[in-house]
Image (tube, rainbow, N blue to C red):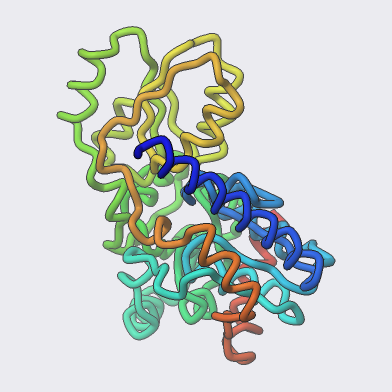
Length: 311
């Protein structure tokens, strides 16, 4: 029975993949998938990447339709950078709790209190917040972005953990918003200590969205892409991974001979995982749900995103 069920599942997956390839041609569509997506999504994507790479691909593509397999703010960024394209997301419920932790009114009040400060916003934020921003950044380029600014004071939103990490690499004064990533923030020192005891030969690679005390334990600290690159090039054969478990797809693809242990079983973003292959096919069949950003918001937000891409 189990073998038959597995066979049926594989047949269904093959049929969905064939239908997807057909729809891609009909719609002149490109599929962008974040590294935190399910394996079945990453397998069929034209490009896999972190927020920065996928923002670049959205800005550069000649496709008529962009299907963004990620969370809502990522689809918004694609629409802002490619306003004439149709941008779809497989499931519009794919939100980001961290992005919801910052609001326009609160940010405007903070700007009024610090009129000489520049606002640097992590790309994990809504279009409305990006429209109130001087420049966006990702975890891959945050330090570089801040160093590029001709000012002494930074308002940083919304991730306090990434903000704390960045603060260690700049002399600028940073006013840090109190947001955080629910998934990365779950990882504790206790988790890492226990994993190191189980795997003494493994290196601990960690994303700076984790808590500062956890980041301080890292043998390597970096963005999702940086972690993948480091593990690929490292002579080490075993790693404890401190970021979302979807990253395992690319890690295993790049380094099949190496062993990867995720630092806790809770490193799973439920919002990223709501997308699946069936929903991906359906969104191209129906051309829904589409991402919409009001033009006045998009025009302002585009400035902060384009400044990031120029750094």
